[in-house]
Amino acid sequence: MTKVYLIRHGKTEWNLESRYQGAHGDSPLLPSSYREIELLAESLRTVPIVHVYTSPLKRARVTAGTLIKRLGKQIPLTIDSRLKEFNLGKMEGMHFTDVADKWPQTLHNFRHHPDQFDETVIGSESFQQVIARMGDAIREFCRNNPDEDIVVVSHGAALNASINALAGASLAHLKDRGGLSNTSTTILSTNDAKHFELEKWNDTSYLKKTTVDPTDTI
Image 1 (cartoon, helix red, strand yellow):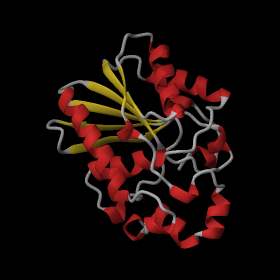
Image 2 (tube, helix red, strand yellow):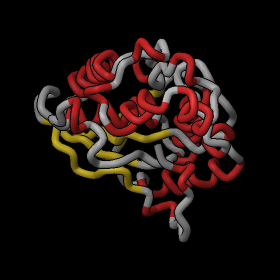
Image 3 (cartoon, one colour):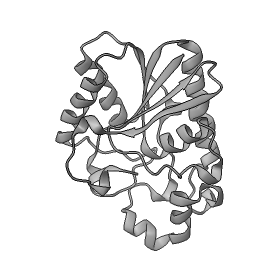
């Protein structure tokens, strides 16, 4: 059985400011995020990871590189553009509240009703496009690493849609499990790189947080 450990990147300045980063925006990781990546590494210490795959966006690349460094192992790292964040078009760089004011229905559908989301309003990718590219990548990684443990470092919106789709959720029910938090771990397993079982969703227990920050999760 192949296990895929899907990691959302560490928290960034724009995450803290509640701004959409998307596929073209980016901002540095917060200083505190490096400690959280270290805690993530501790949680994965006993997992025999054979390969790490990451989005090309800096926030994900830095998370992946820091994770490998903290694990202290020689683990191959592959950058794959199919793992980049959802292209959010005109929303990128905007504050959540400004997007809500300008495109209230579009944002509502993006967050709660993917089957009703009209990407043409903001010039973004569609959920179907994101699911297709990320799904193709993850299935390929699993075919290339049968019966191994691999890590995928990517982004909240793209991971959320793709993980749920791989686990069998329809477009209308992609958001039923809620959001993914920064530096979280979600686990999928597969025997054939075609059918996937969700073993764990949005685990952040190793971060040992005592308070809930809503800017952590999307």
